[in-house]
Length: 212
Image (cartoon, rainbow, N blue to C red; front, side, top):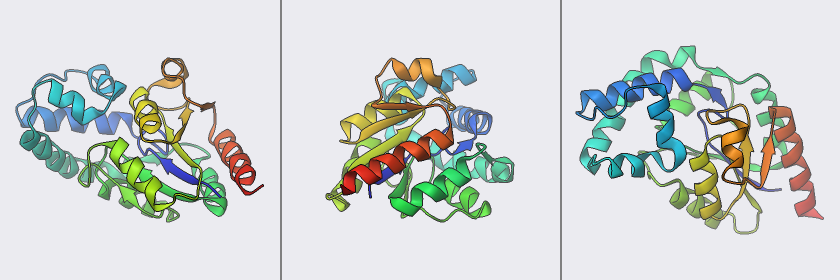
C-alpha cells in the first residue's frame, strides 16, 4: 500500500477553460487585472498559484475574496466538468490498493461535488485552498498522518512537481494535463505517464513493491 495524493484540475478532470475563465473573472472583479488570457492564468501554476499572486502585489485579504468569488462562479459550471477518459476506472483501481487524497489549489467543495456526481467517493479527504494555500504544507501534513506509507504526489503542472518534491513525496507527472509532457520534463518528475491506465499500472507496481 502507498499514500497517493492527487491534484484535481488537469489530472482528474478536464477543467482548464472553466477554471481559467472563472478565475480570471474573479480576479478582475476584485481589482487584480494582471490576468488577460488563459496563458497568463496557466503561468501562475509554474509555482504555487497563490504565492505567485502575492508576488504580483495581491494581498491575502484580496486573495481570499478571489477564492470566495471563484467558488460562486464555479457552481454554475460544475455539471459541465468531465473526467478525463479512463480516469474513473484508474481511480477505482488505485483506490483498491492505496490510501488516496486530493490536494488542490481549487476550493474543496468543487471536487467533492463533481466527483460525487460521477459516483467517485474513494478519497479519504479533499484538501483545498480554503484549508491551506500551500500544497507543500498540505502534502507534509498528509504524509505525517501515514508515516509508514511511501508517498506519491500526482500532478500536471510544473508547480505541482516542485511542491510535491518539496513536500517530501515522489512525484508523478501526467502528460494529459495543463502543462503537458515537455514542460513537466523541465522540472524532472520522478515518473511521467501518458495515460490514466499507465498511471494506475505504475501505482499498482509501487504499491506491491512497498509490501515486499
